[in-house]
Amino acid sequence: MLLPGHGTRPEDLLDVTLEDWQRVVQEQADALRRDVAQVYLGGFSTGANLALDYAYAHPDVAGLVLFSPADPLYGEQGSLRICWNGQDEPALMACERGEPVWYSDWGYREAGKVHARLTFNPYFDWQGEVIAGVMGGSDPHAGEPPMETHRVPREDDQEGSHAL
Image 1 (spheres, rainbow, N blue to C red):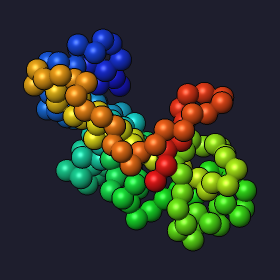
Image 2: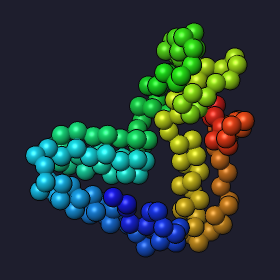
Image 3: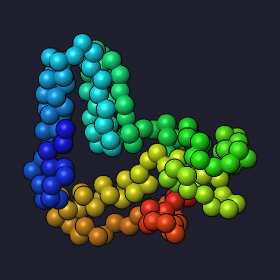
Image 4: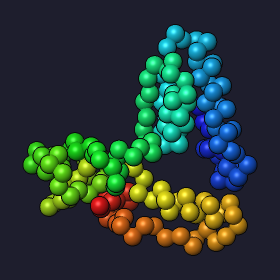
């Protein structure tokens, strides 16, 4: 399903509320229950958070498939990291020992650096400030990305890796 305001024009998000999104998740879960015996929910980013929130309130949800949820276990301050990132065995072991890592997309390698999977949005706080500025009528360009996040350009695309 596509959440109201998503996948269209940015201004379509102006009149959408969290409650609108929660209502749509409820409606879709109810529709799914009419067709199957066990309900599994999934989502990406905001959708993952909505599915998780719904499952907390509905213990009959059989399982979740969550991609990039806001999860305090992962990310810059998290206690867990995904070390299998397509790198060689010594780098994998260094990550698992808790050595400093660079967070990056799957398979990204750079000599002399240990990479863990990028499981969080390093610009989340900054993006939230920009959105709050737009919604509040202030200058949306006033915020800056957090200083501890560094963008390293990649040759094959512009995604980059993020250092911690």
